[in-house]
Every structure is written in structure tokens, then in C-alpha cells.
Length: 363
Image 1 (spheres, rainbow, N blue to C red):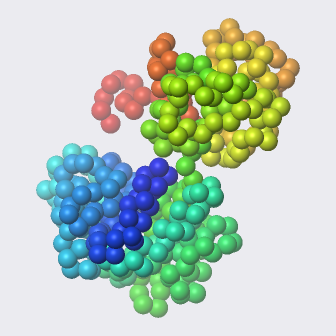
Image 2 (cartoon, rainbow, N blue to C red; image 1 turned 120 degrees about the vertical axis):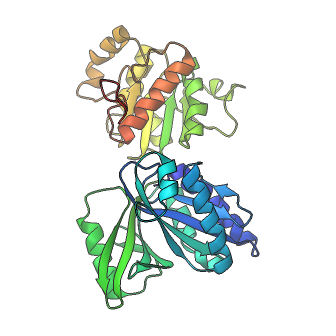
Image 3 (cartoon, rainbow, N blue to C red; image 1 turned 90 degrees about the horizontal axis):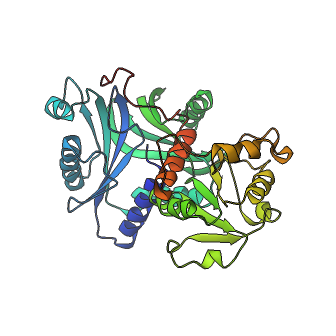
């Protein structure tokens, strides 16, 4: 599925369509995949009427074919399911070279109300709320203009499905699901079998960097490039006015005692402490003992980290220290890359190992 950063880009592009009432486009969504594919279900790509795309799916042969279908659908005004498998789209499937199978929904966006749901998405991303969204996209194996329902807990945020019994079945399916990955399923209805794509959409990841070291400054633009909402914290206001800080960076001046009242943290947040002052690092880490963050890391040599772990103030805390994956990094930029990679691994529940097998075989 799309990252929160990609969703923000898509939302901005869709709002541009709203502002320009004459613009036409199509939205391509991966609804089902099987085997090795370039993206997972829930990933979207916007195709504009002139053939330009927003948030590319692959950049290769399948994308070119999807764009060609999208331009036809913009002209026809009818949604379509395009499948790439052994029975259809075989030439493109062979060119993909990954052996996977795809099902892609392509829906025309010809009127303002076709994208009504984006305001709900945007609001929840801004409020940092998790949103569940169900998209009814096919009936009796034929594409229909999608109808969506979005909710957070028991609060319904948007509903264009409007069928009480079908909605109840969708909600029951969502409650029974243990996966946070987007997936499609079929349900019986009075009009026949319907296909629904279920997604769990989380807010953008937020990174709080504490300290103004060289490695901290190197981490800031990398985090921004990954779409993370980044905040630099320092107890010295002068360091927060440094000329080499990224434009538009959010900053906060806070001592360890002020930190939790100054910076908003949630389960979609990470914090890296890197002040290069051992006592300050320990004080900031101790202040974060009960913070609901996904990742808490600290920069330092193994000897320095051993001294941290020996501090009674940090007893029982789980801290990624030294922060970062072991990639042999030495320079501030390399250290920043190692830290960002470890955060991504933790967020995605991965161990940060090799993609290849131990014997070097391609898999």
C-alpha cells in the first residue's frame, strides 16, 4: 500500500483536480497480488489526462500498460479491472520478470464527488489517527464505481456504501482480520458477490532528533526525504537557529524536564537521542521512559553505551543503543543512514538482514 508520505502527495494532487473543475484523471489501485510483485494491495497511482502520473507504481512495463488502460478509461468513464496473470496480460507479466500476478482497479475521476473521501483521509492524517477504509470495487467479478466507508474505532468518518447489511458484513470481516496489510475479499449480497478492499491507514511516521551533532544534522534531511515529520530538539536555542538546518524544519527548545510537555509523541513516533553529552543523553532517555514511541535510540560508542546501561536512571528501559544497523558507518551521513534503516526495520517489523539467501542465491 502507499506510505503515508505517498498518500499526502496523492491527496495534494487530487485536491488540485478539485480546484480545476475541468481536469480529468483516473486512479489505479492494486487490489490483489500473488507471488513476487513490485508493490502490495492498496498501492495507488494517479494518472492525469495528459498521461502524467503521480506516485508511480513501478516505472516499468506494467506501469506503461496500466497508464494506457487509464487513458482509455478517462475517455470511456467506466471503471475496469485489469489482470496480469497466466490467462491475461501475459506479455506484460513476462516483461515484469518477477513471476507475480496482479489485479488493478482503474476508476475514472471525472467529477468532484468522485474524490469526496480524500478530505476524510487528509483530516485523519493531520490528526494522526489510524483509519480503516473499505472500498467496494466489484460486483459479480465486474468493476463498479468504487464506494467507500472509513471509520476509526466505532466512529464512522465517511460512508458511501449505504447498505446496512453489507456494511455489517464488512465490519465483521474487518474485526476478524489480524493483518494490518491491505487485502481484498469477497462477500455475498442481495445483488450477488461483491469484492471489497480493506485497508488500515496510519499517519506519517514522526521522528524526534534530540541534539545538534553532525550526525543529527545529517539525519534530518534523510528523514524528510523518507516523508517522516521531523522535529529537532535542543536545550540551547542558539543551536536551533543554525544556518545549515533544513528549511521548514520543526524545532523545539526543551530541557529533559520540559521534553514531554513540549513534544507530542505517539505510537507512530521515533526518538533518537544524540547530544554527545552522556549525562544529557541519560536525562533525555530517562524522561522518555513512559513515552508511547515505536523506537527509542541513542548514539554512542559501545563503551559509552555500556555506561548508559549502567545508569540506574535507565534501568529496565529498552533503548536501541548504539542506534543503527551495523553497515560499517563512520561519517555523519553514514551514521544517519544506519539509524534511519534501523528505524524502518523496527517500524516494519523486520530484522534488517539481507534480502538474499545466505548462499547468495536470488530469491
